[in-house]
Length: 209
Image (cartoon, rainbow, N blue to C red; front, top):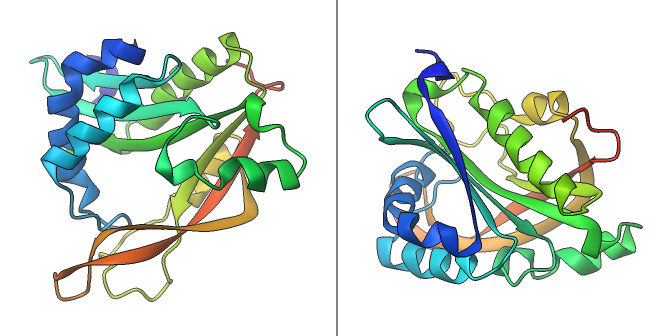
């Protein structure tokens, strides 16, 4: 299955609003997978995306298949926006010599199973990077979940994404933080847990996009 049959769209700010319900369902469906292990709630997701969409430089990149079914999403916003996951981000980056005002943050990227390993991530992130550059951002950041190598919840054959981020020009930093969400344990039960996260960064000034 090639991603060539997908058509990609980018929505900015309030343009995201008509897609909130569909994106919320998509997030809940796939965020339960490792390494997120997030037990999502449609109402919470809709509320989150509603507040997200009021940011004028917040973006949603969405891919649709030939039947117009949502097949991939990724979000992004300036680091200085009011997203709770970024609460400590500006101070951390400032201490590490990076201007928070110049950093664009990539949120989640979620791809339906049949389009994984088809080049969708590279396509989506190129669209986001082009947007960030046109808005004057000089750095891009993303964060990934840090799980133990021997985590019993890890599916057999799972490959982490560190190599992918490096191939896309990102460098893993030493900036770690914790973020709490309803998390599946090894028995499938759900409790609110603090999850370890780490930032990755990339300069747009050397971008070929």
